[in-house]
Image 1 (cartoon, rainbow, N blue to C red):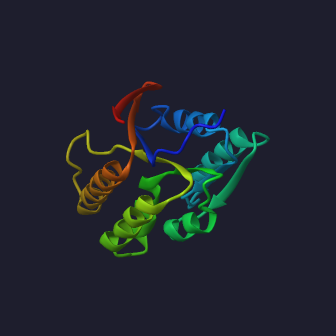
Image 2: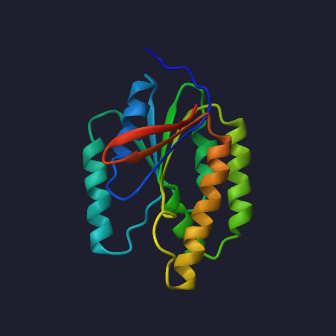
Amino acid sequence: MIIPNTGPVLVLGGARSGKSSFAEKLVEASGLPMHYVATGRAFDDEMRERIGRHQAARQGKGWTTHEEPLDLVGALRHIDDPARAILIDCLTLWVTNLMMEERDMAAEFAALAAFLSDARARLILVSNEVGLGIVPENRMARDFRDHAGRLHQIVAEKSAEVYFVAAGLPLKMKG
């Protein structure tokens, strides 16, 4: 059964909350060809291992993987098709990459918001909710938290559904 596309879906949660697994199940349930847009970059051995585990978990399940750490909107435009389901994992890694490259965050976020308004594919976006803890002690961490929070608000507003996942349990917040 193919689930109709009603608009983007945002899945938020903390580290190891089960958000990616939940998002993957949403994509699998769509009945559409599955595309995975990975935004992470391997800067060290631990991250290479983490990425490898994620890739191995999807292997043989019909996923097509696209790695794009910076030009997320360009990658999405390239594969946007109403006959596809696309999982973007994750927005906070994308924010990190944009910050490291000193990109114009407002312009990048606006481009993503514009794309989400016109997207034809079934989109599931995953992101880490980082605004629930204490105020970070350094400026870069505070800037990251603030950028992520603004991006989440933008994406949530454009999304048909929003879920918050904790302890593997999804809580539907919108839709």
